[in-house]
Image (cartoon, rainbow, N blue to C red; front, side, top):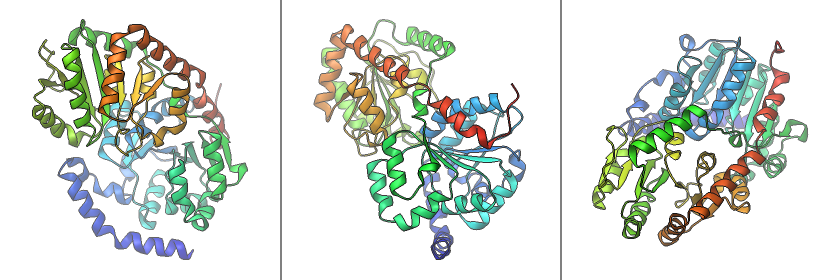
Length: 426
């Protein structure tokens, strides 16, 4: 209890710093200035109480949660669903995926009063947290109210485990107040157990990110867009790029244009506040570009398309021949390579893939992922893939097979959640 008291005092004391941080971030994304009261649990008129609350902190987790939410809506049509996020970008993804089918608010800061107001308003039957978001106050109050807490698609990298190990005496009681943790892999489970979770609180479901599928509608839209943009040109995509990567990508593209003058690059910055920066970089590198938002069709002289829209990454992968997945040439840890793999694309990533270690190992061991370390290697790999269509198809086919072999985690997760929800009508 002393830990919770100290934690609360510190969290309340740093609120002015948090307000300043929101203000600073709002200069790049005005969404941080909006809906401030939701961050303190004031959401009574914005949610339907008595159902499922699902929290996904980041854009990646929100995308992974989409099939889970759809499955829950199908199985429990009478239960309202509230999805919480932490960022305006995550909020936009929820609204674009579900519209008014679900309620959406920000998860409040982990303050005693804020969490109490939030739970009083939502009155959830169950709370599901995607991956690993451990908020002491939220966990404690759910446990006190006897509301089941499921941590779904849970993973714990070696790097995160080392950090949590330093506060093992604090982690143990926190973890033991969770109801069930559905781990992606055995290695994740063992790390959680070492931190104090009981084996009876863990089940291994696999990663629901493998339960990705390309709908016929999406495939048709991708084919149409490819015909509009570049029916006779090779295309590569650099997706979810971060600061420090775009420079490498543009330098590589300049080199590739010397060998493939009609090559088209689609660059998709990870964060919308960087759209203008990436456009400026394209100018700096003297690359002819258009933006996705402009609605323009690339001309023969167009060398780059800057994807400055939200929620279209899966569509844009379907337009490309080769995919580089960002956050991996800088120490961000990489982003989800399975979205590209689902389109049967050869996937390239940098060396920093600790956010997706197990997935990348599976792809690499099955010849479905190419790891590079610098611009020179990136240029070499893309050159080889562009020069050899059979080589491209080989990697793309392997990527789809990896997804098919690991499919099924979503069903296992739903079976694990089922005992904590009302009996379904068949």
